[in-house]
Amino acid sequence: SLSDKDKAAVKALWSKIGKSADAIGNDALSRMIVVYPQTKTYFSHWPSVTPGHPDIKAHGKKVMGGLAIAVSKINDLKAGLSNLSQQHAYKLRVDPANFKILNHCILVVISTMFPKNFTPQAHVSLNKFLSGVALALAQRYR
Image (tube, rainbow, N blue to C red; front, top):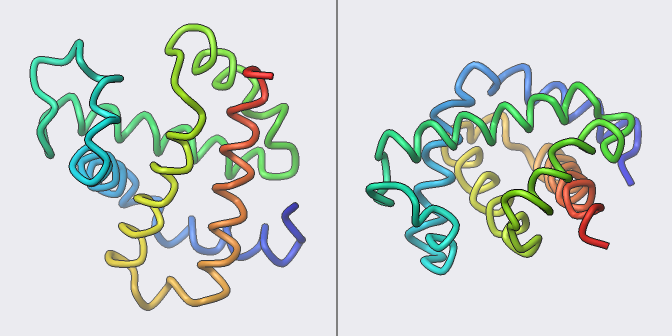
């Protein structure tokens, strides 16, 4: 679970990267569909699943909006992300393993876009946070 130090580190990092959330989301989602092509199946209803496509950008923005909610609900991710968990489990039917894949891509993108802010401590804390988000999103699958 997240310690107070982790929570503070995540909030501090988010305060620096939040204004670039749309770009992070686009790059992370674009990276995911290239590096993990099996994830394209969730987006087969889009006219194109190519990096930078407007649908990718829009969904990347949604993903990062969800993470912004998670940051604001960091003290109780399970309750804070309950609606998103329900949506991903029952409506979208996303395999929860994909949350970990996207989390990895988000970490990679943040590390490349914000190398000075992505300290080892920030990395550890953000990784724990994203793992907590993945667990919270997967709660309805059980």
